Length: 236
Image (cartoon, rainbow, N blue to C red; front, top):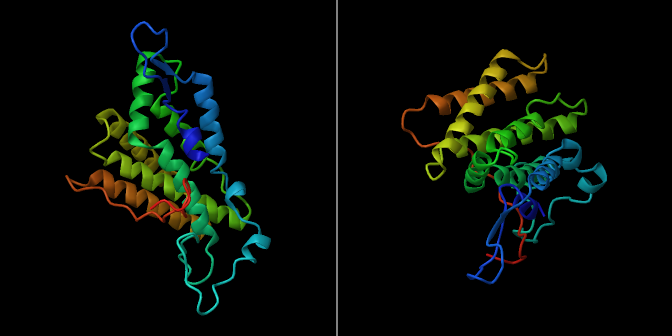
């Protein structure tokens, strides 16, 4: 459903019309529908949505000896234990990678240049940052941990997009601009006295600045965790 909703952004209805058959070959998804889709996608990044309840986590113990792991289990960065934050990371990556997909970004820019009523790519980035990096840290510690995971996904995906030579130059420029603005904010506005939050902000700012300073070097980022099989189940 994330994939389906993301198709609304920069979306186009098209038919293989023939001359004289009366069909409309191309029609953009209306602006209000695109923005509703964007809001729905951003809701999936809310830490309250991504945090699993203790009752669910307690039902996911390590595999017994002799049982093999399968690709339909979420990956883990905690060894044999189920990793709730890794599951949140996978879910966040599905949303953010769709929002920052380079061809979709190009369509958003192009459609907005033709008609300013349509959402532009910079608007999408702004809304994404508004719902992640620019909201207060949740008071709940588990939600705060998930919020950091989501924020990190946003930075990594923006860095990947800004360095993607297959993306339109205006798309890369917009991503670099927003990364620079985010790094400046992180440098100027450290988050309180929470050591974990401070370290998170510092690392993100350092990684952004390292990317922006690189001289012709390809962008690099951590390898994202894979999602369990989805559509269709069992596809390679």
